[in-house]
Length: 216
Ligand code: AP5
Ligand code: MG
Image (cartoon, rainbow, N blue to C red; front, side):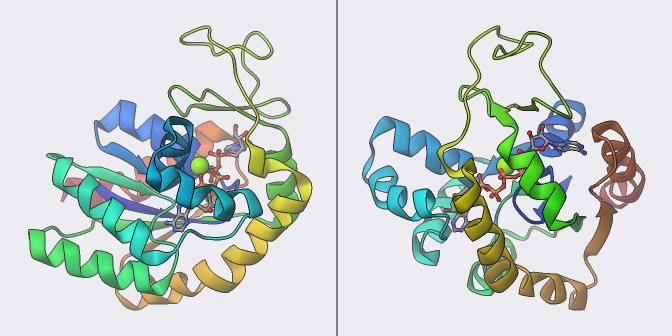
C-alpha cells in the first residue's frame, strides 16, 4: 500500500493513517510528527522548523524534501504520506524520488471537509505526543479524559491548534496545498472521500476505495 493523504488541517489524515498502519502494516510518514519530534529533541532541523510551525506557515520545501529522502531510504514496505507533499514543488520532487526508486503510488486520497468542521475538530484535539495518536474531546474522546487509551500516558494539545493559528493554517492550505488536487487529478491518482463522516465510516470508505487499488 503506497498512499498520499491530501487534505486540510483537521480533516483526519493522521487519525486514518494510524488505523491503516495497524490494519495493513503500511508505515505512516507524518512530516508534522517528524518535525514535532525534532523540535522536542532540539535538533537543528527542529530549531529551524519551530518559527514556521508556530505561526502556521509551511517549513521551506528544500528542508522537507531532504527529510523525506531520508525517510524513504528507511521504508521497506508500504507507506502512507500524511501531510506531504504540501506544495507543487514538493510533489514534483517526490515524483522524481519515486521514479528513482522504481516505486509507483497506488492512490492520492483527498479528504473533503468544510472549514467550520475543521476549526471545531482542531480546537478540541488531544494528542499522545509519544505515538501521535489523536483524540477529540467532542467527537472521539479517550476513555479517561486527558489519558491515552493504549499507554495510559498524558495527552496534550498542540501549540498550533490555537484559533488564530488554525485560521492561518487553513489559509495556507487553500493557497499552497490545494493546487495539488488538480496536479494529482491530472495524473489519474486522485480518490476523494467524505471526511465529514464518523471515523469508522471514513475508514470503511478508505478500505473500499483504496484497498482495491492497493491490492492490484
Ligand atoms: P501537520 O502535523 O501535518 O498538521 P496538519 O496538516 O495541519 O494536519 P493536522 O495534523 O492538524 O490534521 P489531520 O488531518 O492529521 O487531522 P487529525 O487526524 O489529527 O503539520 C503541522 C505543521 O508542520 C504545518 O503547519 C507546517 O508548519 C509543518 N509541516 C508539516 N508537513 C509539512 C510539509 N510537507 N511542508 C511544509 N511544512 C510542513 O484529526 C483532527 C481532529 O479531528 C482530532 O481531534 C481527531 O480525533 C478528530 N477527527 C478525525 N477524524 C474525525 C472524524 N471522521 N469525525 C470526527 N472527528 C474526527
Ligand atoms: Mg496530522
